[in-house]
Structure formats: structure tokens, C-alpha cells
Amino acid sequence: MIVRIMGEGQVRVDESHLTELNTLDNELFAAVQSGDEPAFRRTLGALLDGVRGFGEPLPDDALLPSELILPAPDATLETVRAMLDDDGLIPG
Image (cartoon, rainbow, N blue to C red):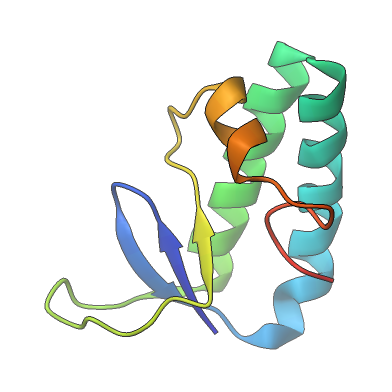
């Protein structure tokens, strides 16, 4: 699966890592819903680190359709709230 981290580029992540990423996504969703800024910041960082750690960066000139778009590391709680749907940032 191709994941875009806004402001950074694209990463290819094997779908076998979706369970771990969904756990972090659920924690992020809860932090955003409760307005808990420290938990939001910590969990967003962990989610993005997970994507980077599990994934393989694609070259900058590789423009493939992204299946997931994640916020930049410095995104605000309000920005991420606007990006969320009922499943969070990662469906499933």
C-alpha cells in the first residue's frame, strides 16, 4: 500500500502492518476526540514513525496514487480532526 505523509513524500508499506498502524490510529482518534494535545502529539509521532519504520520510501519522482494520506508531523489537532472520518485516518 502507498502512504503519503504530507510534506514528506510517499512510503510503500506492506499491508501486514495494518493491525499495528490501526492500533495507533485508534489511539490518535481518541486523543483528537478528547482534545488531549499531549496524547495527540505523542500518538501522531508514533503513527508516522511506524509508517516510516515499516515502509520503504519511494523516490521523489515516483508519483503513484496514494491509498492513505497522513498529516505532517507538525499538523495541528484541528487539522487532523478535519481529516478524520468515522474510521480515523486508516480504514479498518
